[in-house]
Amino acid sequence: MEMEKFPVSLQPGPASSPDKGNKRTSLLTDGREVKRRKQNFSEPSCSVPSTPPPFAGTSLLSPSTLHITPPSLSTPKAVSQASSVPLNKTTQKRVTHISVAKEAGIKAKNLTPGKKKLIEMVKKKHQIASAFKRRYQYSLKKAKIAAALAGKENAGNARFIGNLNISMGARVILNGEIKNHGKSLNNRRWTVKEKCWALALYKRSARAYKWLRRSVTLPGEKALKSILTKIKLEPGVSPFLLKVLQQKLLNRDAESETVKQGARLVTVAFDEMFINEEVYYDTVTDQIRGVEDYGDKGRTSELANHVLVFMVLGAVEDLKFPVGYYPVHSTCPSDTLAILVPSVIRDLQGIGLTVLATISDQGPTNRGAVTILRGSSDQGQYDNVYTVNGERIVHLWDTPHLLKSIRNNILTSDLEFGQGKVAQWRHVIEFYKMDEGICKTSSLTFAHTCPAGKKKMRVKLAAQVLSEKVSSAMFTFTHLTGDRLAHWNQTAQLIKEVD
Image 1 (tube, rainbow, N blue to C red):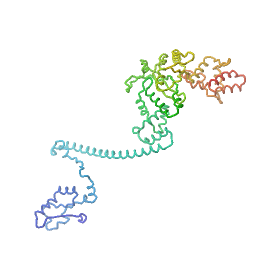
Image 2: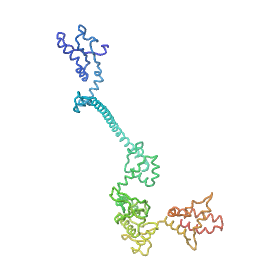
Image 3: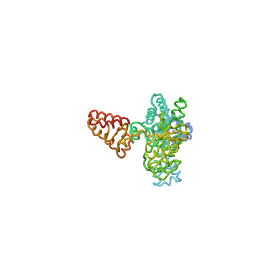
């Protein structure tokens, strides 16, 4: 061991005072004193053996007689680190056998081997807990930094997207893609506006929404349905929907008077649609759902398998807005429907709308309700006209359903029109059979010519038969074959006029 590597500072007492020198020697040989000096970052200490002086007559600086402690804690780096530690910050207390036994009220001398093993286990658990605590504190620090950076990044992205000249739908998709792409499903966050836009897309086609969600970051179905649970929609005319519709009218105040008056001209369409029979408990309203319910008009114990929907349609403006619904069993009776229709019209008149007409299909209950309404008014000189609050309301039959009614009449019997002209359905069947082949001129199928079951209820099939495309093809066949298919002309003429 080379002495020049470790500078030694010795301050022995005067040579004439051996007692003081012995005292100094005992202090240097005390291990606790040396340890205390290390903790206080003192100069390196030297310990002199406490044995009788075998080194008598030799120099006190002889390396063979001194135990020198390296100054590992007296380097400038260690001193600077020590100076940076706060004085009021206490270090964590070390867990030892003695400290654990003391907290448990057991003397360290009375520790059995089993207790010692238990203490060792406590020490290991304490070390694991300390490691987890350090990791947790480090994770919190990183999370705070990441949140601050994410906030700045989101603000920059929002400004960037806001400056783009794109549509509202594209802006919603782009904002959601930048904000939530790469995150887990539980960590994605959406605004109410983004959820409403996605909900409108989902209601258009749930299957298309699921397919689009595979390649574009969009809210999940559960998040969309949670919005609907926050809107209280009771059977009947919804005050919430009326308020939204009224707000749409108020937004027209800044426009011209002609535009405002045109926006208030509406028609009311009502129809029934099929639903599955299902009884369930609504936790939001604390009621049993799934039975026939007419709102403030009462409810029955019958299971609802249809729903009667009332929708407002703009006569001038492009407006399509549902305002109420009624779960019914099979169909709504005519006398009940004759009460519901004027009630809905009065609610719409109460928010400033002018109802010009009502629209429905030619179902038996609808025809009966219109007959009751017409009989209760004094508009005898008009057909299908009745009054509500002094306002004249015209009832119109749905035009697409009129096509289906005409088709159904031709199916069962010949139809006379014009000056002795007769249209027959067998002409359409003959045309379909001749049109089959390589050069097919129409899109008719067997379901078009011989509808049955649910196919007979589809308006699309009737509209495709009574179209200009079919009439033109039939006229072409008659011109090509001469007099052999001349009897098709009258049926083709009816189809052309209906279209």
